[in-house]
Image (cartoon, rainbow, N blue to C red; front, side, top):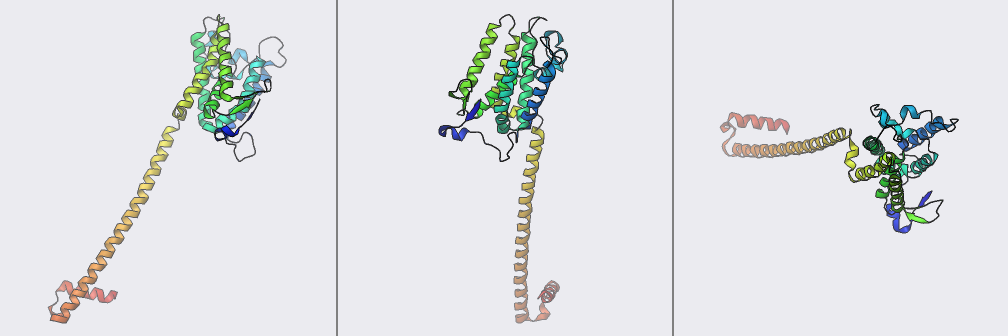
Length: 290
């Protein structure tokens, strides 16, 4: 799968960082790919047809819903190679675009929300202890696709298996439709498909309400904005007080000069003996400054 921009959609094209690294500004995606790759190899290599090594400990099943850590670890185990390949390609091609677009912190929060909501949907929909266990990061991949499609609605892609250009939004709608069909086909136990499908809703809501992704950083940001505002006010206040002080100084100097001139006129007309004590002091002070 590769992507390209047309002249009609250039203003929606993702901005590539100045750094030469593909994952510059997308470290969450980089490490997520590494963890998914290593965990997949550790889980299934050499296991034959039996279950993976990690599934008994990290997958989410109806009988282990109270083991809370499974609500966040299930995306990191996947014995379905088709689902794993789809997830890896999605993160490799589109994950960095989503992360660079909204920021690593927001991107990480979106993935956490998607993981928890998927687990909650599974917990509600799984009917019995024989329900298919929840594994894989397909829900996270769907959230990423929705985020990129909403961020770059005119971005076009070309699939290797279907070399026909299409809008990214068309691809996302097609994948959503495929997941819905799978959920309907698995009427006996749709819990897993619906859990992954919930990533579509989470991705959409997060992109419509980006402030939801600022959890934990809003207080710091607010404090920073407040401090910045106070600094600006202090700077303006200091400048204002300085201007005010200089204005008063100029007024005082002008007033003293006028008073000195008046005293000198009085001396010329009446003589120095008719000056008051205050007038003498002021004249004496002015003579020293002069």
